[in-house]
Image 1: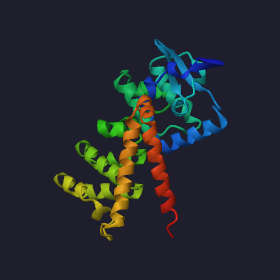
Image 2: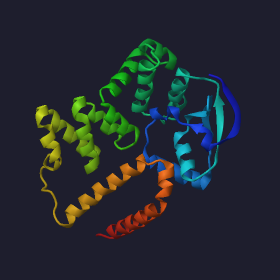
Image 3: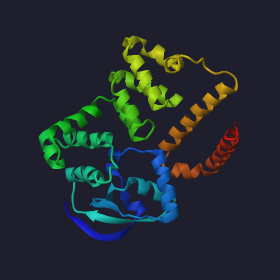
Length: 278
């Protein structure tokens, strides 16, 4: 891999995200990056390659999203003189030292090298400097997941940890379970409990269990009523808004800016009031 060590200013509008499908969005981490760039500016440059229609981003997706959110016009970037499969390999290798890439993202890249670029597992292992068993585990991890669940993970709608749990289910049942988990915003412990319960029952019972999972996750508690039920509904609405927002492109978000500000105001008032509870 050859690097152009000089740092150049690149228009944000010229940076493509072709390889962004291999990185997973984490809303909390993105929010922290927005705060950091707002306060300190861009500390380290992103890494790009020259594409046919501009630049393609290899490393720095959180920084790019943050700068677009803050309406910044340019980013500082260093260039790599690589293409194709080497770009994908670089996405993993550039993030190993900082441990800023998780095993699911590695799996997405490795699967692409295997299925789209036609590399054997041995060739991928040599390219990445890993052994064949590491490559095999990554491919198995991602291919046990349905395409719908893979997309939910990429968008940050469900966590990588939840994805690992869902991979234990048959692919045909994963999306229904994922939708239930997202709607009810279950914790990692609750997800593991639900998946374990499903696996102990025949597949034809899954839909009935997922339609009313409250007793499974918290069997010692009856479902709250009155204001408690409203709090549960509020949590589910918040999750629905989050999912809708993440699927909106920047132009749509700008068009909804006044409604977003009003929603933020209402949410902040609710949070402030709820925090006063003893």
